Image (cartoon, rainbow, N blue to C red):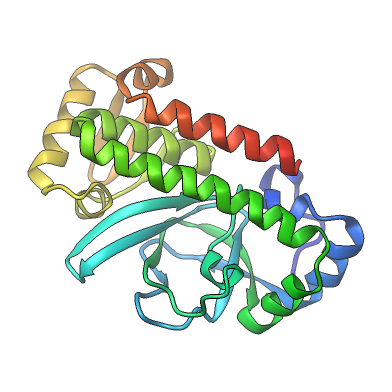
Length: 240
């Protein structure tokens, strides 16, 4: 699919939008637009990273794992960022797994082309360094969240982060997916989701989630959400 240069700014990738026009125009012919299909793997643990992805919409989750059935989400990326950061750090094989969590569209570039563009210098490496810091904050804060906060607060935080990136109060996610994302059993997910439903903060049925009371859900979430949101706003301000 050929790149859409007329795409609305509301659906643009923020990192690509922050590039000077001449850099963006040089990069664009090397990119292709693809559809992000729910639950599709972008890359797996131990595999070479063939492409770097810049989401225009939808969400990609970065998962750490000790085995196929034991995963934990350590990062979540929407149109504010990119997936394939290890390549920017000089690492061509991932120690994590990346999977589409929310359907959408992304621009992708081959690993070799991406590495050559980064080696040219310019604004792209500077923008990616700032994004790398934002991801480091998200990952480290997630570790704190998993250690100290109750599942209900963690779920509320995760729902808010997903809503922010999907730019919607409604999205689809299965119990199994939530269980893997949050690193808990399905029973714990059901109890936490049930509690949020009883408080009329969300509606959750057959994998479809609707946030009914956004301010209430923010109040129910742990402080990690605010910390991560503030970091993302700082990224947007510096790359905008």
